[in-house]
Length: 370
Image (cartoon, rainbow, N blue to C red; front, side, top):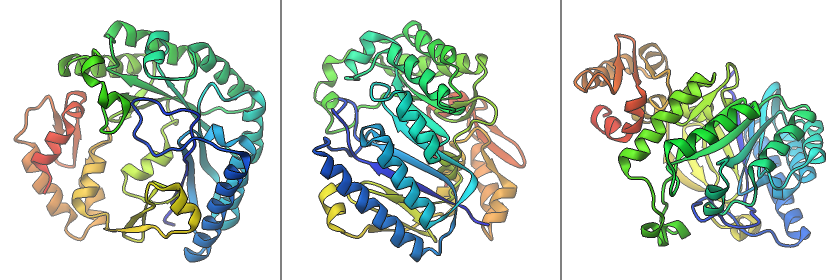
């Protein structure tokens, strides 16, 4: 059975963080949130008919800030997913949240509605860094939110962590990494801050006192090693988990599985085709159709995604997925064998990037992939 994953984009934020390039809009009156809920549910019912109520293994509510949408609305949309698709009994169902928005009642409503995983936007445990990032919460808010999620019955909680922040160092990063562990987080997503065009940070980049490239690399390697020492195994360039707590939804992306995205800026890959909704809330509410983005799933794309994972690219998997997969793997392996040993592990049946390789993955992929 080929499983489908579903992504629901909730494009509402109370305020725009200065580093964020994700599509979002300020929440308006309750009627606007209700209108969006109804529009998403209508699309889900239509897709359920179109794709024959397919089996679904993961559902992910991202944003934006899904917690701004309200727990009852999130549950209503999840109900539409379940009415439209065959959501498996063991499906992973995630909601992102801002620690400043949530309480025990919020998590209890989500848990009763079928959610079983929370992704919390922590970013840092340091007050100065949170202020620079424009975050509304404090480290204490994160701690309270984690306690509330646990009390509501969530045994799978992820936290986001940003690296190479303005004025940061490995010492400041150590406090945030150790705070993640002290929370008892099951999963940590650790990303190097990237200055995106069009954001407020882009307009003041020269004033931000960002670490240089070498210092940012040092922070990444420091975080990876410290997280591993604290019991979090690295399974992807930016993701670390306790045993069995890897994000199944994100693994669906990285293993080139099929996924359906609903909402403005949401992307999909179904039946060999990619399509997406434009970054336009009004157009989505009006009923505009998604835009075709061409075919997907070719060998080069599959290999690129696989090499984001610590497990790497497997010759056997290539052979199973593509008629000439073994030959294409051998070509990539020959190119990889010419690169420095500290960047990749190259074996007869597998190619995988090291921590140092992850840091320069784009350059490596450009060198070895067809």
